[in-house]
Image (cartoon, rainbow, N blue to C red; front, side):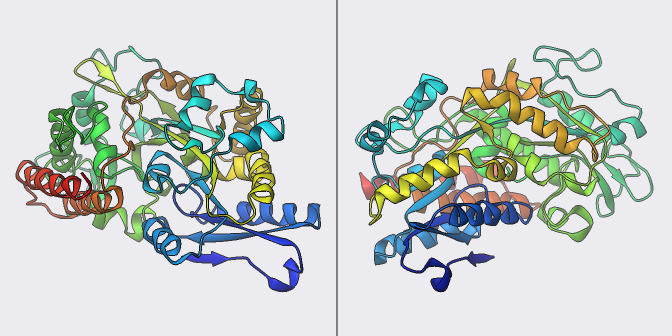
Length: 436
């Protein structure tokens, strides 16, 4: 998938600002029309700047942008971009400090910690706070009702049906909610894993190695001495995840995930998934489930972790038009079309009540339930620290190895997680050594 809205005739003699989308949110079919609408509105609002949208599929965006930077073909703005994106292009992003001062931008509408989050040592203020996306569990109430099972907890510390709401309980519940075409669930000896028609749990668009690791807690692939490491609890999480796909069968592996029957990767939206672990941004693409709500994260060793995504827009240091790019950046930060497209909980505290009210309006006709958004707010108290998208030595090469590891884990029933994790550690160390 690629898209470029640049029209020379429409641009005329205006300054052209190119906006590169693909490093984070923004490439789902439901998001693109809203991005195009935001661009159209901007271009119709004045006659000095022409905004062109350049959209690249997420799986290719990092390598494409790196190639373009090397060739001198650099876009002006990138975003929405999260921690992973800013780390991948360290040193390539413009320090906005002087532009913020020049335009008298009011930073008091943000928590100081969020402003500081984008003030990086040696790089400066590479962005303004834009969107925060806590993670939690989306659940299909109809599937729980059909199985006559209680809904998962919506308050941290609450038990599930007399048990601690932890990863073991999630596994047990997920198996009960996984059903084959004959109506047998995954706890039954008659269950057929080749003919599953409903799954219990899935990390929706959230199934990379570091993401899955945080189900069992925050961690880092970089040890205190700077060498590569595999946190023990991440190894446990990977083994739990792989077993969930190929032994316990309550998590769909890639063949199921990418099938027409399960929504071509949008598994929860297919209506055939009971629980999806993902972020607030998933509200962008949830249209066909008629009765859903959200629940808190289960714990591991007594501690829940709700990993956090936080996005912004950044200006490339090589932009030839930083003033005009900053004007566009301020527009993007306030665009209601983009807030809707990305399911973006505004970092601007003055806009948060409106954000949740608009979500309620959006789902009023399609969802029988009134969503308990307090779960999302409460999840901000359990974010992963260090963040799962933290910087890594030799970032792009390391990320490619992590992607390959996760892909094998999702597709190979006989994948030896422990042995392959040890090989991964050795490979990462070699890549770390290349830049040390």
